[in-house]
Amino acid sequence: MTHRRLLTPALLSTAIAACAGRTTAGGADAPAPSSAPRVGPASGSVVVVGGGQQGPEVLGRFIELAGGPDALIAVVPTAGGDSIDPNADGSRAFRAAGARNVVVYHTTSKAVADADSFAAKIADARGVWFGGGRHFRLVNSYMGTKSQRAFEAVLARGGVVGGSSAGATILGDYMVRGAPSNDNRIMNHPQYLKGFAYLRGVAIDQHVVARERLPDLHDSLIVRRPDLLAISEDEGTAWVVQGDQAEIIGRNKAFVYNGRDANDAGKPFLTLRPGDRYDLARRRVVSRAIDGSPLTQRFVDDIFAAYRDPARGGATVLVAQDGKVLVDAAYGIPVQRRFTPETGSPSVPLRGLGAVLDAALTPEADGRVTGVSVRRVLGIGGMQRVTYDSASRSWSGNVDDLYRFELGRTNLRPGARDTATVVRGFALDTVNGMRRHAAYGTPDGRRAAWVRWPDRRATVIVLTSDDAFDARGAAQRIADRLFATSP
Image (cartoon, rainbow, N blue to C red; front, side, top):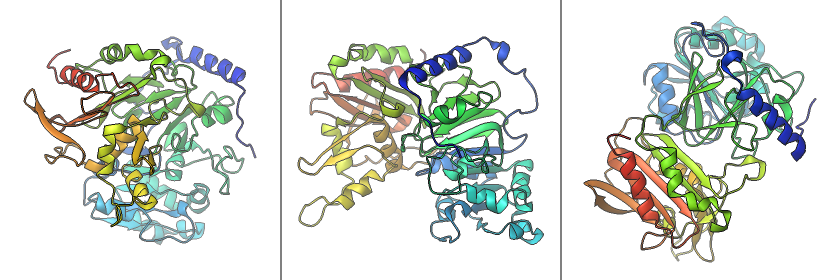
């Protein structure tokens, strides 16, 4: 078996340069247009989720793709082990998201999985969802059986097949981390290299930011298999694939290895965000969420230009609207350990923004804030690196986690109107005729800003360590441009 192999910095730089040279080549290496998908399903949809919490933006989309709340959805928890807890098998989450016709489909016996009577249970299913755990168990139970053909039939009749964590990796063609053990460091096992191949010629990884796995696909696979397209996604984030076209949805980022666009500077992959679209066959970005918006990356860059100097302490900013992340940028922050996104790694004192998190705390009767209460707050939206100092009763965090918290706290279904009620911890005011929910690093609006415009379903989050920075003014300048009727 092959264990994960990390490259030396010099070799990694050489490999990245080689990849960048390949990805920036002209269009001659791209496949010719074809009416038949080369990578994705000929009909139906595939939903690839990176583990962690799935909000209504993910589960709601899956239910919609299956045909609505009354569609039969089969939840397959087999990756989780031989003993399945009916309260933790994934069916409850789908019911909570609005699905009314959910069945659990599970066996550890290939003979059972190959029986007509067992496969008949999902003969009318419009959705199949593979839960997390260890994906070798899905291979052992279903590969080559009538159950596997029943899963494929869901796509053939225009339904949706998806999964999270191990249930995401099984959807690919080449199966990484598939060793029959609990050692996730084993990237390639000779007996468990083949997934269900709903995405052909693709390898899929998951939990990549939360578990610091971002280098692994490059170090252990892509350097040996340049023919493969490798994709990954962080927790709560999904690829929604129809044909060869993919859209990113959810709470954080997705990543592409061996694509034909230029990689991120100094990294062996290209980063995508919710609202971005990607062509898996051409291996190129189709569009970015910010395209067509009055807001531009250059406009935001100009606001934070001074912070490109690391001596200023750095700055990060996230701008989102209608569930799409238009901007997620860092200034003056170096590439982080194991390529953790610069917007999700530095732990900046939140100061006044911490009031939003404080409002979710449930202290003891004597006023003490326990570790249990802090963990409950951290669980809202699936935050990863936010910390709480019990001595100073203060929070530190990053823009990516604050956005996760907001999505978890507001919990809006796709297309739903934002809440008219102010989320606790924010102050309410009206600017230019629009309601604004706002929290700032200092009482006079300096240092940091977390501002929501519920009528536009828009959010701007700004973090700096500079008490002189007019964060309130910067957030409003971004909003004014975002809400303009023309660029």
